[in-house]
Image 1 (cartoon, helix red, strand yellow):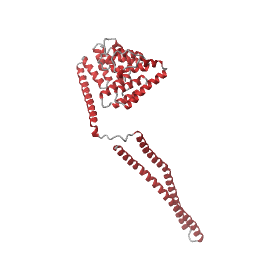
Image 2 (cartoon, rainbow, N blue to C red):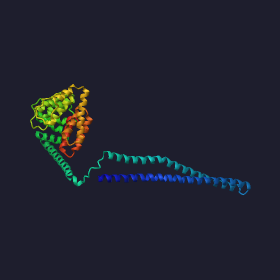
Image 3 (tube, rainbow, N blue to C red):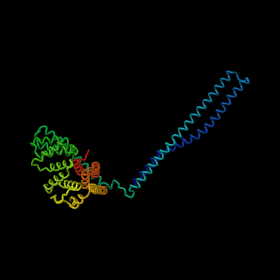
Image 4 (cartoon, rainbow, N blue to C red):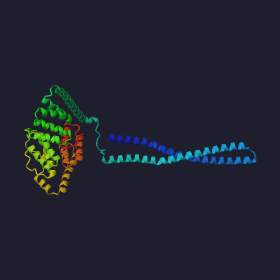
Length: 410
């Protein structure tokens, strides 16, 4: 609360500095206007006197008091004074007019500043929380230390990977046939978020291994991540070739399914992913992510997957029931879309109030992509990355997922 009082005082002080010269200028202009009127009356009086003097010169000529030369000289001097007085009247009139023109601008400036201050106060009263206690730096020491530790850890990890890339590059210059060296170089570059550079390393592994399926899968992944999650023709060709080998690398089936989904064939993608999950080892850490993709796609498209998943799934991973799918299939396309949008909106609302749910953010990103709402998916990815910014492993997870489902990460 104290900080808000201090900020409010500073705001009022700044507003005072801004308003004071404007008001002073307005008062000066008003005072000047009054003095101008008084000055003009005096000048009018002087002009009347000068005109009387001209008439008096004509009378003096008639009486013979002044010679012609003297009268002309006197007349020129009086006319000069008349012109000078007339010029002063015009100058003062222009100054007054200028002050009057500037007055509306000053008034608008004052009103704008007052509206800004009043609006800011209104927004704070509506959205602010003055009842919350202060959070001094001392009370956040653990939180700050955790963030610094995470940043230091991430920095150290980056330094280690950069040194590994440098060392491996030097070694491979002298030993270009080192298959494991190229694999480690590609993996290090991928971990550093440099998939385009990693493509060269993985392409070497493909050549040296005589196009082994595992290395084809690594090369395909570098191509996909280098294209922001899009599976282009080259990546498809590499994946299809890898699928003909005896490799059991899960990236092959997953990315082939993702290619089907990007082509609009969601049912075929779900079939591929179910087959992939059912053949996976029980401790595979990538299974929950793929199961979530299956569930989201099945619900969005009204695909019945009841009993098709053979893995033991946690309650939150359980797919839509047969009744859910049947109900979705009986709905009109518009009603089904409205139901799906409602579920996604509720998930988004829950994450706004309960953001510490990485699985929820991942599901929301995937759901938006399935629905074709790429802008919302992009926004969700950015919110998740910002909330978990102090947890590098979570940021890496969201980055990986974003690239896999086609969300731009740059």
